[in-house]
Length: 214
Image (tube, rainbow, N blue to C red; front, side, top):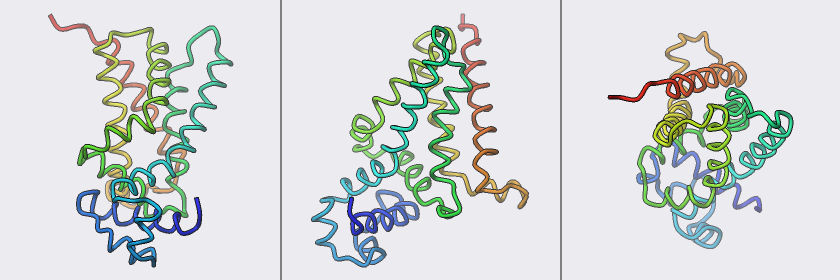
């Protein structure tokens, strides 16, 4: 990806973060990136395609790292399942460690992704198929093995709540500053990940142990 494309993507992140996918303006993106509309059409095509490329630009390297970490963890723990907390940590830490840094202090990508998922645009299903399905399938199998192969229903609820917790943490990250009354460092990745991993793992374990309704 060349420098012009990266500049457009970084400008798009700000616009999508502030206005969501539906409210984002291509003209505002061109103004922020200091390019003309033709440059966006040439490099990306539609606003939808620009959003998809923005996600790929950020998420694909993270997913590659996640898969490598999971491969190593499965090899290390074989023949046993990888501990649940380790699996969840591999899902969460690479994502947030890339997106919560001093250089990303405005958290534009996190807000843009969170808002788009909340809007449930039609193309998000296509994006899931393109960028997320393979990694999600691998991690769903690892989580299921860690929990002792729970029922299909419990896994569906569990993966839904896992995703919702991560999206909520991304979309509402800056609320920590308000709730923490200035005592929480928004750039402290390790502290955030440790708490989020504990929260998600505890919820999944409780869900797995939940008895069926009569």
